[in-house]
Every structure is written in structure tokens, then in C-alpha cells.
Image (tube, rainbow, N blue to C red; front, side, top):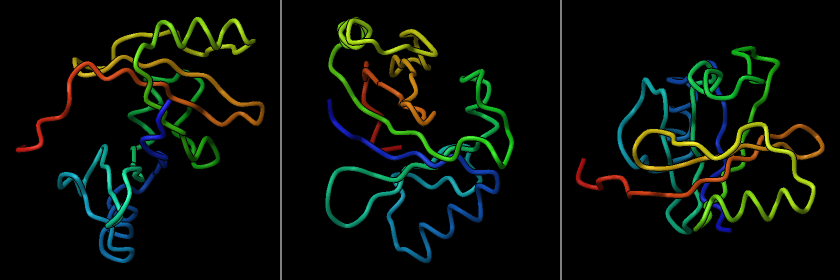
Length: 133
């Protein structure tokens, strides 16, 4: 598994986006000040901080409500074979809140929670984002 990002679930997307871009100086992979998703990286390293409008992810994860008191973050891990990882983790006792399924045409995802209720997204990339866009 490879850590690809820590994703923050936010209610005021433009403010949080400007904070990470303008105040902290992280570089957006693409401009998306109004969301609903953005990925920003520091000058060094491969991992990133991603921002997700909490109302858009609530539709994907039934247990997430667009509530400021709800989940705040998601740990995102990339795997080479989502079905094999799902089977392996299930055999170790993991209980998934969403089985492997497509998310758009570029990836498949599955979700589980740690014992504290923090959400973990496992991603299998089917296609890379067009870097020229």
C-alpha cells in the first residue's frame, strides 16, 4: 500500500482551499477554488493534502452526513489490486462499509473504518489524471 493523501472533509471549501494554497503555500495540482475536490502538494514529497466538499462525499459514504460535527478526515491508500486487498483485509477481520466499486472511470474504491471511526479509502487506479488539463 502507498499513502497518497490525507483528505480533509470541509464545509467551507473556498476558505480552506485558499488557506492551504495562499497561506501555507501548497501547490494545487489543478485550480479548483470552488471545489468540490482539490489536491495540494508541498514542494517536496509525493503525499498530498486533498480537500473534499463534505456534501459530495456524503452521497458516496452513507454514514457521512454533511454535518460540521461529522467526519473530518479520510486516509487514502493506493493498492495495486483492490479485490485482492479487500479479500486479504477481510480475512484479517476488517469490516468494510463499502465493498470495491467504481468511482468514476479512473478508479475503484472501497471503504472501511478504523476502531475510532476514521474513514479509510482504498483506491485502485485504472487510469491516471490527464496532467495537461
